[in-house]
Image (cartoon, rainbow over all chains, first blue to last red; front, side, top):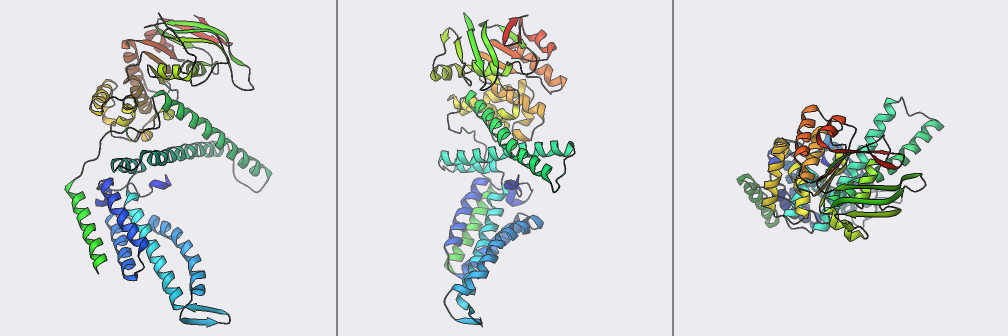
Length: 246
Length: 216
């Protein structure tokens, strides 16, 4: 699934305990989001790049994800440098670009990319299932975590039904073309996808009820901390404190 | 005492013809019975009615001598019932195989250590111990069927409802399931097209056809 693009791998980062990765992720994301210091933002971006390297995530998929994030940044660059008050660095007719506008755009871009890298490298290198468990082990409230898992499970149901129907259409010779037939089949596809997903989700719910589900998500222990997890946490702690002190 | 006692049970899906009309049947406690019938005859619907997941239009249903009148009656009955759904993908829900098998036990308040022991026992019996740490959704169809069955049998239900338990699985796994069902000590109701399974597990067979259930 799209949510688990980076979860498969054999790097050190993939082998770390998901709980530790979550614990490291949160302070780094908060610090990055809240800082106004360009130096801190740059340090966070470098840390994010190093983490991506640790996870051996460099490649087309990472660039694709960052490209999506930076599409929004491009919109920002089209407006902020022209709208923030400050020292003019370029002017053409009524348009003027300010130094402060450029620096603010740069700061936001660096922070956004750093957070995207942290998200991909830390929670992103776990399966959703491991992440759900890690959240429960860390004592996060059960209801939102259970809702998060249900969301993932039912998105999976819709996705599976959609794939089955697409395969069925291809096997029966359907090709998308410009015409009323394609529009009609696409409308049937969407309608049937809703109906089939709804009916399947009802069966999933019935199966849960039969096994005594009451809204609480029971769990067996299956995580264990290793020295490498402690070493990683210590290293990231040093990075965080050093960045704050400098 | 009868485990299941249905009298004049009627059911129809909205806008459709009757699935059941005045259905009468009973199953004694400890009995192993099979239900056969053509596709769409209502075998799965009957199981949904017996577990209270669907409500009959009219009629009376008694489980273990108790009238099933309220949602709470059914909730209590469900805690004594195991239901294997036809499609294991509907039934598997948890992150790992062992958690899926332990799910119903933990929901019933069984301590984790005890639940794990039970899981281990049933994994050994159904020869799925090597799958314990795997993600259930990534298994083959036959493996999913065995995991779903383990998740039902682990609770040692007093009434076991099985909807096509050997559908789409190989002969080795079918043999394992048959062996377990033959040893099952409580009431069992089995809907299947697998004549071999019926003959080796069930002492009586019902034929479901034309909204009626007849002993065959």
